[in-house]
Every structure is written in structure tokens, then in C-alpha cells.
Amino acid sequence: MDRSEYIIALRSYLGSRGMQPADVEEAIGFYGDIIMEGSDEEFERLGSVEKLGNELLAQSGIFVGGEGSYQMESAFVPGQQSSTFNPPPEDPAAQAKRNSLLIIIILIVTFPIWIGFVMGMFGAVFGICAAFIAIIAVLTIGGAALAVEGVIQMFSILPVGLVLCGAGLVLIGVCGLTFIPLFRLFIKFIAWVCKTVFGQLRRLTAGVSA
Image (tube, rainbow, N blue to C red; front, side, top):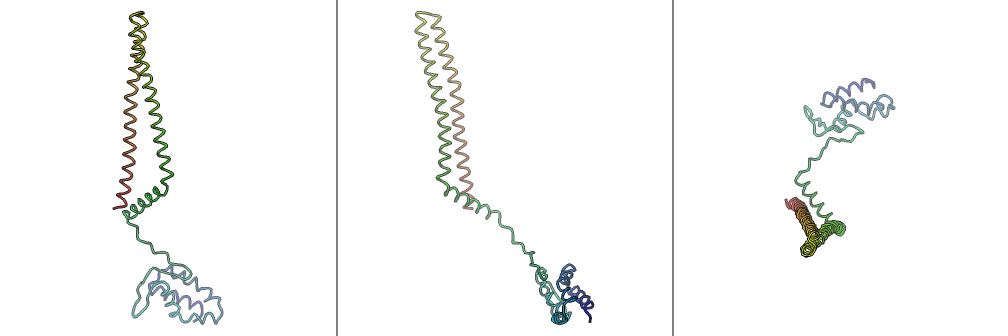
């Protein structure tokens, strides 16, 4: 049997034992240079068609024995690593639990950083609201003082007293209308922050304990 006949016989042998055509051609290509261009000693070391064919089939995961053959595992061809194994997908619940635990650990480790930022934000909001409330309180007291002064001036100079009294009452009314919505907005903001923070903490703890 010459070398060309050897390749033909090897291709036929591999195909008849269940190797896929693409794997057959890759195996032939891998040994083709040795078969066709190698020295006589290299060619003889390959052995018979059956010997080399069985080695290639075993490398491809095809067991040959008895009267037939069967596939043992995913195909493996010479010079190429098998990459058909895919790990099972991770359980979404386990992944969510691990993510929640990781977030809690990060929050604990970075506590000195983010607690200062949060407290600074609360302090800024509280300071702004306190400043507005102080301004409104001062204007309200000023309006009340104008109203009282207007009542007193009515007994001596009626027009001046009426103007002062009216200005004081208007100032008190404006401050009252401004204070009530601002106070309600501040209460809603505090409630929203508390609800958001405690809701996130509840979700994290629930994810870890699940």
C-alpha cells in the first residue's frame, strides 16, 4: 500500500467508525505531512491504517471495540483542545444572595466614608430648611410687630395706623402661607429618605437570609 492509498484507507476507516467528516479531514490534515512527505521510518512508525485510525478515534472520544463503536465524550482532534464543556448556569437566587452579601460587606467596610456623606447631606438639607423657617419666623414676628404698632398709631394718626396694621397682617399671611407648604415638604422629604433607606436595607437582609 503506497502513501496515497494509506490516506484514502485511513479516511474511509475513520468515517466508517462514526467520526464526523470535519474531524476526519482535520485528523488527516494533521498526519498528512508525515504520511506524504515524511521519511520511510516516520511513515512506518505510524503503523497500519487500523492502528493509527484507532488512536485517532480514541483521541476523538470514540471507543472502538467488539462489533461496533460508540461516542464516549465530545470530539477531540489532535492539536486542538476540546471546548464543548459548558458549566451549568448559576442559580439566580444564589447569585442574588451573594450579591446582597457583597453589598452589605462593602457598606460595612466603607461605613466611615458614606456615613459622613449622608450626614453631610442631611445637615445641608436641615440647615436650609432651618434657615427658611428662621426667616419666616422673623418676618412673622416683624409682621405682628407692625400690626400692633398700626393699632397703636390708629389712636393718633389713623391713616398711618391702618397702613402699618395692613402691612403687618399681609406679612403674617404671606409667611403663614409659605411656612405651611415648606414644613409639609420637609416632612415628606424626611419620610421618603427613611422609606428608601429602610426599604433597601430590608431587601438586602432578605436577600442574604433567603
